[in-house]
Length: 195
Image (cartoon, rainbow, N blue to C red; front, side, top):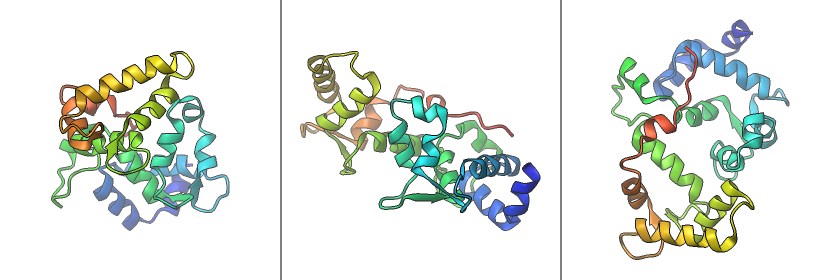
């Protein structure tokens, strides 16, 4: 199966993906193999339905939000390159030391890019702020019916009150970063990919 993946991916493509994402050659071919196994339409792209068949995403309360992160606005398919770009946010940061980036671009798995990715999971309307309603929607997804609406509202209000530094009753990206400055985002937002 790995040999099939490497025959369908050109060496130039693998090199470009390596530079862009920091994944190793073997990681790219393994992930390509996984990508093609998910591609039920066998058209070189994944649909939302393809992602929804992944058991870990199907049971994750934020599964839909994570799936949406793979798709550019208005698109209903993602190709392998887009798939890899999104997965790169979850690559452990210590892997950066192995392949120093000389292009002066911030790696997709940098702390800042991981935080931006997480922020976007909350910023449902993409206005660069997390409102009380957006926070409530995400909290509701995560806890379901286990907590009353009043309790959720109280949690959302307290969260915004603690994070909101400019008094606009919302959380900006900079305020989000400040709140999470002591959180080990690098580890919490990392998936170990086999080499």
